[in-house]
Length: 154
Image (cartoon, rainbow, N blue to C red):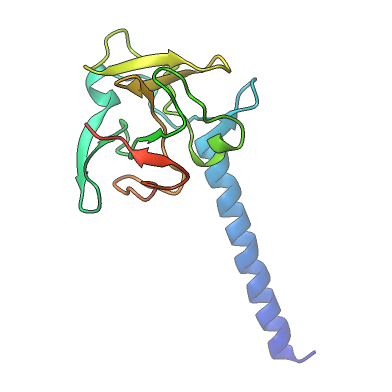
């Protein structure tokens, strides 16, 4: 092979390694498997106050929507029923629950904590379980209408 070809292959290998490292570190800092084999968020604040659990934000593509304490959009799942989460197994890789394991004693109006079938605690709004979307970042709402999930509205 020519010298330029080796250089190109080297650059591709370095870029591929960087992408893999980024993906692994991003997933390990934002999710973890619990004893039930499901994925939950681990990058939440250690203490929450009732006023920081749910906030109202506005985006041009969806209008007003609910967000978690970090500003991430919250979603509901069309297959859920009041007080019952049906997003389990591989569903949770893209749609982590809004984890309520450290919920304060006092919650805002319309916000409750449900117990999932796997024993986990999850925030719900007007009875509907809440999720985040792994493809969003703070201030983004890209999951509305994806896989039967819809942005939670106040």
